[in-house]
Image (cartoon, rainbow over all chains, first blue to last red):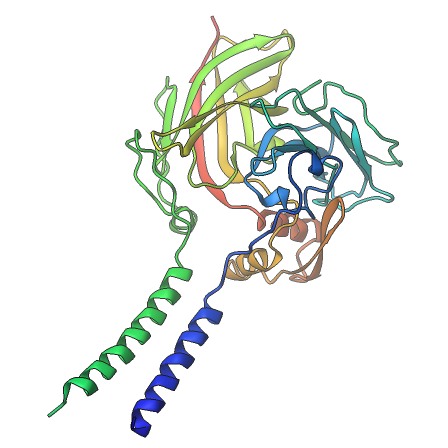
Length: 158
Length: 236
């Protein structure tokens, strides 16, 4: 028959282990909710693709904005992202368009400085580098009707 | 006299404490820079570079390879294409994150005489991997808008820092902890929605402008590796 001391020791050890498992901060884990062509025309943020081996393939800096061609290594998807980086702190309407196939996201109202908007994503399982994609978009004082056409302000320039 | 069973129990108890302590220490380790297997660069803590203000080496007059605080960047070529000066660079990756040469126009610039030209963008040209398939270097082509009046016989290219890209849905808690550790007195609240990300400033020092507060908060969503790397070159 175990002594009370032994039982108390076992309970204490169990408590310490449970405490340790919960107090140690865990890295955020994102579950990817799409795959292959099933990711086409979906949100890279909410699908988890944006946190699945993400990389920025190209950046361009048209006036007051940063346009990025983003890629998910895990999902093999590509999308456009535009950030308002106006150095005077002004708010602007914004649009992000990925070519192909011209998925476009326009903000309904002005966005504050250092706010970002991104397009839906497109899957492409083969290829490397910018892989034939152009991320387009910009910020403006007025509403932007997408998709924004390819131009020298895309990333990479179109 | 302590019997064996008692000794075993005490040992188990001490082992439990040791495991918990080790886990606590592990969870608080700073980010460690990865080390290329074919590089002579030393492993160095990213956070340590920022905190200790390690000395910056003065670059020689003519150089194509710069190593600052253990991270090497190489200028591999320059050329003129239409109205752009294009410079190709390759840099070692401090860690497995998405490291970039810039996240703002003024973080990379060229100096031609008295004139400063901010880069207009960049695009990845190549990735390099070690023998184990681990990504160790990234190469980009940097674009600088030039005019026919620019004398390109001698100019410098400066890369101020390497910076990690921001997630589509950034870790707000991590950013707040970073702001708190830097004693900014800035409190943020994040809003991740379909197709975008925004944050608001809940509180800030009274003398700090809204723009400065947003700029500091935005920077907290990234890690940085401070340079600068400065290259002197020219086109004959």
